[in-house]
Image (cartoon, rainbow, N blue to C red; front, side):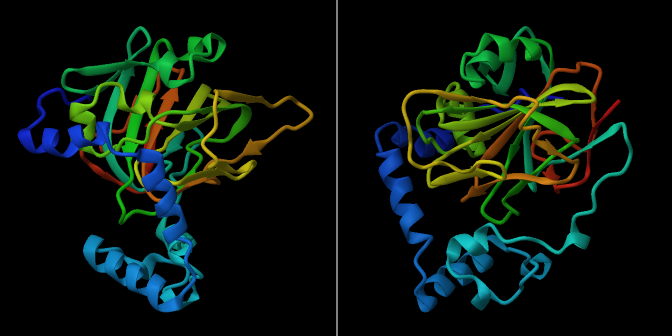
Amino acid sequence: MTNENKTASFADYRFALPQYIIPHHLISRLTLIATRIKTKWFKNLIINWVIKRYNVNISEALDEDINVYENFNQFFTRPLKPSVRPIAEGDTVLCCPVDGAVSQAGDIKDDTIFQAKGHEYSARTLLGGYEDVAEHFQQGKFATLYLSPRDYHRIHMPVTGTLKHMIYVPGRLFSVNPSTARVIPNVFARNERVIAIFDTQFGAMAMVLVGALNVACIETVWQGVVTPPHKQPIHRWVYDQEQDIVLNKGEEMGRFNMGSTVVCLFANLDLKIDEAFSPNAPIKMGQAFLSM
């Protein structure tokens, strides 16, 4: 299901290469500050611009009145009306965790994940180098899901799972849009990220929340804000039976404060990816994703 045909264009290189020299974390920190300004005229100006520029469907929001949002970030991470994102039913069906578009989806082959034509990267590197975690995903399925500024930015569970590990990996904050993915090698394994490992009825599942330029904050429902601050070095949390953090299918598990990418890994090679999940296809949280 991966798409290996599209090569990087001159426009892709023109967009991506300057990112090697710009101050990623400084820019993202300034974005964090700006998106939390409470001055009404300022935050409403940005909200209205984003709605028009990216054709945001504000009618899906639980609160359609932009005046109720304290700052731009509250609007950006807005909850939706429950009826607009029904969860795919069935005990053998996993649901899509986010709104956005498919970057790539397919098989993990001997620890290798396809990024774009000419670019592959290691699942072990993506998962922070932890052998005991990565060994579950040497063969399996992956899906890389890109969230644009117009999308709903909360991340939900594809299937009911028990949290086993969370890993914070420091890194750069390259943009993660398709142009960058076609140019910058290992971009998802180079960027700062928060990784959640769950035990599910289908085996191990990893939800990798990848930071990016202007993605100034990543949080989970059990931890709250994980980043910022941007920490060194890699940090790992292990959850035992006494903590027993279980999240049900369709439940929120985290959110991006500004948009980015989620890379989902599944240990079970027998899972079948829905045909709708082809590269560049638009997706909605809750739709059928994988099945047995």
